[in-house]
Length: 331
Length: 116
Image 1 (cartoon, each protein chain N blue to C red):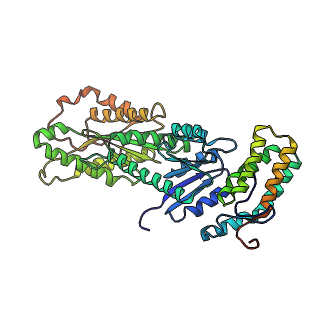
Image 2 (cartoon, chains in turn cyan, red; image 1 turned 90 degrees about the vertical axis):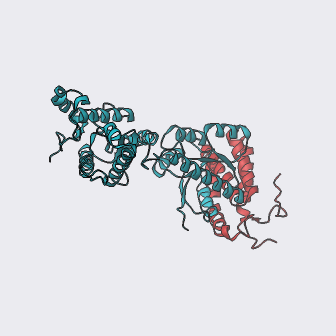
Image 3 (cartoon, each protein chain N blue to C red; image 1 turned 60 degrees about the vertical axis):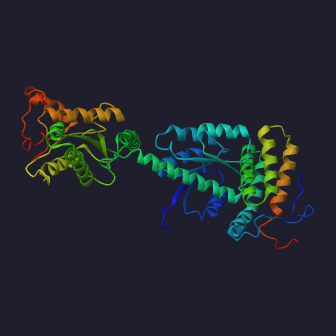
């Protein structure tokens, strides 16, 4: 089959039901995992991030309602559609289930054709919602993710990094004197610059990194499982590549960008907002330190201190800056 | 109350509704093979007065039997579960409901091998 199989997680206290569903759905191009308790099911859902969850209402210990409430409370799992499996189709149960966020109900014993149809329908809707959500989160000019996506992903990544105690870094970048470029060479060239910066960010980062256009001429890259030092290396590589880039229409022009880099440990608080604030402060320091440089958030104060006497960027020289290297990165 | 649709009398085999579904045959056979073990668990839980365990077993049988094409077993299991859950049933009623379920479990058959 050409299409990638969808993943379904079955949470039901009865192993008989697991087996039954595996057989009943085996011609539906789905991969089925199963879990026998609510608590375990929630953990599996967070690990697997399945396309659909089939959830038994009536389980010993944690009930299906409690499981659903918890899944809908977690940003990681909130978007996963849940179909309730219920013994008795009482309407109060159904109302409660829909109110909690279930997309559908299937009553046991299963009518096989109906079960398959409901599963297909839920997976189809899931696919469309995913596609629309994705389109709404892509920047039209550069093809990078947009700010909405960055904000959402950062919350997820921060929560994942905290849960698994793994590193997480963020790079914020801003094209230097972009307004001048636009004014001097025209907006089409400005757009071309933004597209090239986007290309560089994508090429110099891993597939697992999340590159975004944060707004205007500002970019951000989320780097999961990456230390501050490694993220600085990545940022430095991006900085050098852009600086060395030869523009077809303006081969004497040197476009540069400034970079602020932070990680979860350096931010004041372990939250998405605080990580952004920290990277922003480092970027600000890079700008005020003379642009075309990479500043680490944990060294931001000294850098800014060194350069504060030279004043704001307003009176900076016209010619593109000569290669400066951030205080922390060796040439 | 416990009349089996396709099973005349009260002693013939109770055949799965999926008897002629090749997809399900193996699965139903496996389920039926495991029923004696479940019967034993039901009885020993009752004898040692482990009502929580009896409740769990009847709850699982209720769901499973329906799924494997044995609605009458599912009903009997639901009956027993209901009595245990509500706390309304006296020991005699509970035992009778359990025996009813045990009897049906023993008669369960994956396909029309012996009956008519």
